[in-house]
Length: 428
Ligand SMILES: Cc1cc2nc3c(=O)[nH]c(=O)nc-3n(C[C@H](O)[C@H](O)[C@H](O)COP(=O)(O)OP(=O)(O)OC[C@H]3O[C@@H](n4cnc5c(N)ncnc54)[C@H](O)[C@@H]3O)c2cc1C
Image 1: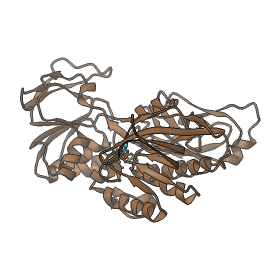
Image 2: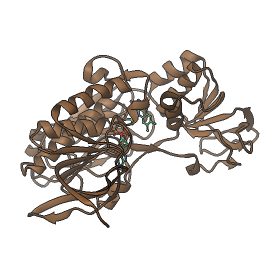
Image 3: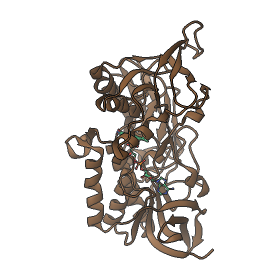
Image 4: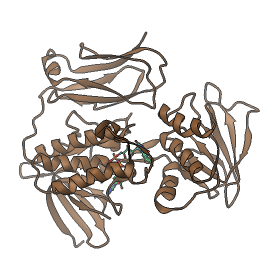
């Protein structure tokens, strides 16, 4: 195959909040050629379609919409000299090449003007974000009529393309995108009949329940699921059933609800097909790359940040982690990244479902992001063993992330035979 090969210092795949922050930090930390490869027509990632406010409180101290938040970062990236390669799909990744006494990342891009190109980069940041769990993954009975969308697809239709997906909607799942779309559908003149959640708790942020459902009088039902779609060409309604504690349908609880649209907000899956091709080790719980405090994956020249690593609840943290990954990638490309020399595995107790990073070297202070598996409604103690961290929480809920900060200095002071650090939650 005829192709050009480009050689750059730091390549970033994905132009969302994580990727743009990574590219800025890479330039600010000395990398000469930094390029972002983005398959969409503009940078900004999912935030381009998030036209509601609520972004940036942590970073800028003011409430911005998604596009406003991203505009600030994209402007900074242009000022810093980051190159954006838009309309460019990365479709193939090689395992890192052993070149010039180190490792080099190598991948393949497709662009309508330039065709297929190969890119070789001294360091690479994976920032491909996540995708939504689709209808096909749920096994709902019935025909496959039009009118069933993931909430994010509907969000793009309404907020970016100017199409309404329907007039009377049911929402399945209490993920944040579904809650935000419930409000958006109401604001655009549709009726939202109800939101159904299979679990006994909501999976989104409490503030979204208050602002998107309660304020608009939209009822939500826990322990309920859509079990059948009705309609052949177009959705005419759904059957909903109540679940018992073992998530089995309760006999006699099934009811029909008329609607022409079903929006699914039933989970996000980190987008890691490219990571697998690069031979990067994935974590079974997060479904993202296993990383250390430098956001370095098991392939030493490959770093990762944002929702590709773990699904975050606030974009501000995505940008912060993106900046860390970009800095680490730049230092690696310049041959200046030195780890702390220790090898700690992060272990968790049974209350914690996911955590990232999963391994530490004691090379720099680190924030661990974690989610619990089930809600704890009441005082509890989040801790890291060996006296590294302790914090009293008023509650812990699966929809809201918790953070633990560990100091590199304390990690380095631990006896040499300590190889793991347990993170846990004690309920009083
Ligand atoms: C539908 C949806 C709606 C959301 N709404 C909200 C919200 O309202 N509020 C909130 O706080 N969070 C929301 N989130 C979470 C949000 O994704 C994160 O806060 C944040 O956008 C994650 O940033 P990221 O850079 O990791 O990923 P993304 O923003 O998803 O960016 C990833 C980028 O990578 C690009 N990409 C992926 N694969 C390739 C490839 N092979 N080649 C080239 N480019 C590629 C994508 O096109 C995309 O631009 C939403 C998520 C989704 C999926």
